[in-house]
Length: 267
Ligand code: MLT
Image 1 (cartoon, rainbow, N blue to C red):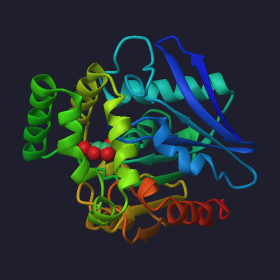
Image 2: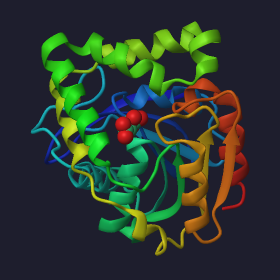
Image 3: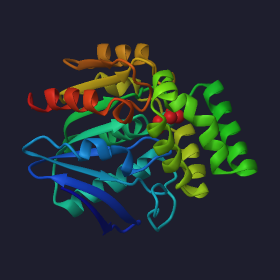
């Protein structure tokens, strides 16, 4: 059964979704979505696991009250504070895209709190100069045309060609999630993404069991990035998801859940 709950941290008030009981797994969502992006996985939690998915500060339908998170390190400190509030010393951390960037920040700040990692549709590199220009253009779109225009620009990149063609319900769901986000949250999120450091060298220090997942139609963090990340992490596993783009857990939720479950039974 899926529960929607809230908790108050020193920095902000956080909405989170929780399902199952047992070993903790924390799901970190992509930009510019919310904990709701993890509903398919929260609705099918494997036995013996407790899945928790927070809205990162500034995101979600009722964004956390408090000062905006300026960097991914701020978000990582929020995750550590949440773990303390939940009474969780160590957890498996699953991050998709921005959630993966956040997992790297968490690894730098508190490696001892991580049991295992799932890095989905993400990459360790910082933004390239062209990438930063693209973010600046997105900020301009946000301020001149609003959140719906951001959704228009992002949807064909977030979702794979198969989903854009054949899964109108997923397209509508993702659009609704983006449009439910406050412009200030999107603004702060873009700035945090632009400012994130390169995490490439951190990969070589990772010893936690790691699963890399990527949608074969992901154009934001393509399969080649996942393959390079997989090669850099000792003992990591790699799963490609056919007919899925960047939001692979929403586009092919059953296949994503299977890959996740096959990994979790090895822990
Ligand atoms: C995300 O899905 O979190 C974003 O697309 C990440 C990014 O733009 O780098």
